[in-house]
Image 1 (spheres, rainbow, N blue to C red):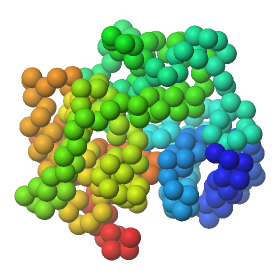
Image 2: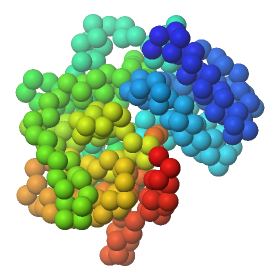
Image 3: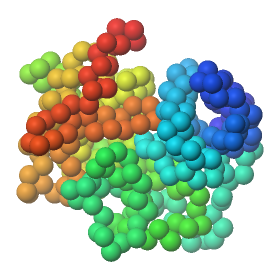
Length: 315
């Protein structure tokens, strides 16, 4: 980000918090006030993926969730909404996306060599990281996590968390996202289902095809949209080589959720290569949740997702 963009982001965040009754002052890497600290690093990363005209609405949604989370707990530091999940409360990391702010730069040749190899890999509660590996694991949503991995020429490794000790969370996230962008999607198919919904299928030999859902703006552009719709996307990642998603733009989204549910269960078989999960998830703004779950053998859909239909005509 340029200095001008960084200042605009700080001001948008300050004004958004003010509308939610929180008065803050602007610091280089965070906003502070009322005994609370609001980190800006993840917000800056997400905004860098959006067109500048989309910043106000996104910042408003992002910080609305942060304030709501803040009011539910007495911690002195607001839990940062880290990309797609609420991270643990912690002091703010240096915000490398905001120009002029300090950043934890790699200090050794080993660190500098590591960054281009980093990727986020998706795991699920059905196929979790091996319990004996002390990996860098970040919760995205119920039953879904991302794990920092290193791609070598002939294999992918899952180092222990200590491997990343010298890197800030921001350095790690930015590098892992950049790594995902370098992975090639080999197939992209747009399908109109019997319900009338549009579903996009992407695949490839890369181990990180499903992980591309962590950069929803790229998927939206692949589908022909300028950016991620305000109400986000629905997705299913049955294996590391396959991802299905739907952009929520019209009333067909509920049918699409059911189509993805069926697709996930058809693909998630005993023979699927490198399985992740058959579940359907909903990614929007700074949050990801399970869109459809199975409770006592009964399919249940997220109530908030159902209510989206009431607002689609306003966008």
